[in-house]
Length: 295
Image: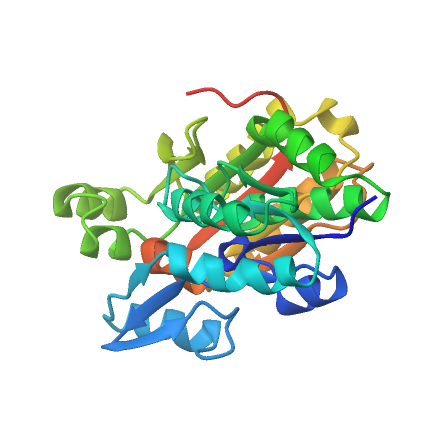
């Protein structure tokens, strides 16, 4: 079997220790905060605590995707060293990064025709993307080929569920993702929108739940309704949060109680600086494998 690398983007929102331990190189998106550009380097340049504090104080970060030249620079050293590549890309429904990776791939296969380069649009984001990367890494470690990994992730990517809620509409209002009237009304009524990622990889509002306690229960009930094998679900479950760990922990505790056969305790990470630039603080997300996503 040819040697290969499994890679992804920083927007999988996993800690650096995960990428190091699982031998997964990643390419960084970028963001601009208060006029200065940073790599989305998993909280090293700006800690997550500082990042979300600055947003809460009024900063409005902007983001930029990985462009074609950056992908070429990222992939080419591996190809020169004789490696094939299977790259799992951030959702095309949220970024043009997948198209940039494909253009880079088409350029590189002309220069390295002997190499196998597979680019997979995961239609996933944040910890859901990270969960697919983790599944792919397990396959690699059990001897799967580049094509077997790429084909399997293509087959199962719409079974990867992403469910989000937010308890703070302030940043959504600042960024124009909800109207000022809707934000004020939502705040007065204590509305916590429940959202998911559609089968086109886009973030879609699904329900308006009144009260944090109710939305925490609703997100766990949603997992019960959609998880593979129901409450006998025996895969991993990942979560992320933006400066609201206690809310995420409350969800994780209910998940671990409801799903006693989980492959591991729920992993809770931070929403990274790129996705966090759009959510702001107060967002919790839950990721698991389940039935096919629908719009």
